[in-house]
Amino acid sequence: MNIIAINGSPRKKGNTSTLLKKALEGAKAVGAKVELINLYDLNFKGCISCFACKRVNSKSVGKCAMKDGLTDVLNKIIECDVLILGSPIYLGNVTGEMKSFMERLLFMNLSYDGGHSSNFNGKISTAFIYTMNVPESIMIEKGYENVFKSNDKYLQLLNGPSEYLISNDTYQFDDYSKYNASDFDENHKSYIKKTQFLIDCQKAFKLGVRLSNDFSNK
Image (cartoon, rainbow, N blue to C red):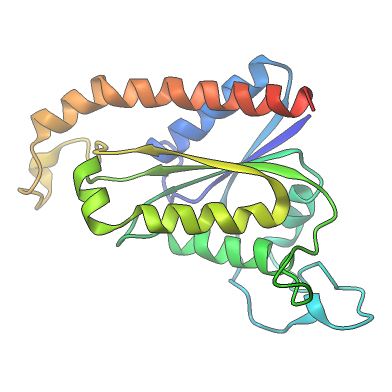
């Protein structure tokens, strides 16, 4: 079994990366082959609307015709069994890199025949890990979950089940006194990091185990 995790955060040692690594640890613990890919290491763009993936009798039908740093990654993904995405929430949505990645992955698999069904012939189980500075109450107030549900729906173009894990109220700075961030209480953030974030890490580990086991039991 092959599991790929995509880190949509610019930080390789931040909250999002930590949770993705925990998920991969869980998957590896039950025998999966795992790989972590950092989007910010790659040179790529979002969809350029060339429609080559939908052109009649084209070799690119169901594939992205663009050639850049994302090409090999997309080829790996369509051969994997489980895909785990991770992104911090910036301005109420995933990062620009993650959005561009999703455009490239999902639009090539979106069919314009049959009510926006899928061109994809395989089946990939997916999960999305979201991290954010705001607590759950603000997340709900701002309607962030609409974004999560929308992404969940589009990931089902890969023909497998999709789920998501949310980590709220994350710790952002090594030293809050060095930044203009008076809206946040460092003591509270430190407490959450030592308590709830550890629970979130356990959830991510179990997510990796469950996704691997669910696929193996099919």
